[in-house]
Amino acid sequence: MFRGTHEAKVDEKGRLKLPADFMKIVNDKNYGTQFFITSRDGNAVEIWPLPEWEKEEEKKAALPEDDEAKIAWMEVVNHFGQQVEIDKQDRLMLPRILRDRFSLVNEEVAVTGLQKFLKLRSQQTADQRVEGLLAKSDSAKGITMAEAQQKLAAREEAKLS
Image (cartoon, rainbow, N blue to C red; front, top):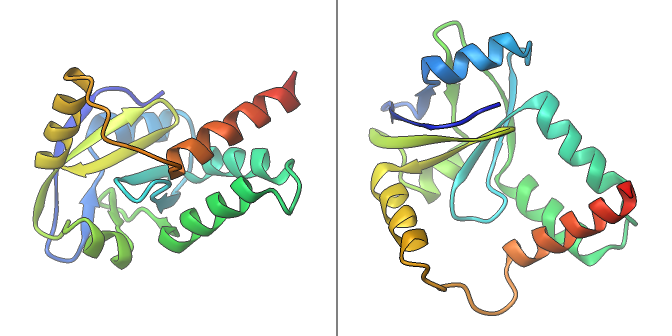
């Protein structure tokens, strides 16, 4: 399980060297060399070992093809998403669309473990996010991708029951 936050840097070519503690988990769990890198909300980069990502896709596959939330989810994750292979130096090439959206080239970043996947943000954005959570700020109004994700999770849970 991925946990904790590590500082890292995205290099001039847009590659992230996976922190050693997270790389150990990848190896211990035999996740292999394939990852799916995306953003489910347009606010942060997510790095998923491919076996964990495939479990997420299986949950969505169980829902009806015309499910509005499912379609929105698939469009967003596939717009930003790309399957990548980690290189021999434990580096992942971040998709250009995400590097550009989040200005991640030559940038100090925070890599945070969220159990099944890693969340990547610039260090400044990560600090602001945590401060917002600590202040219990309510910045999101109206229907959001986060709400679609919550609805999907509830539906998936109901299917498992």
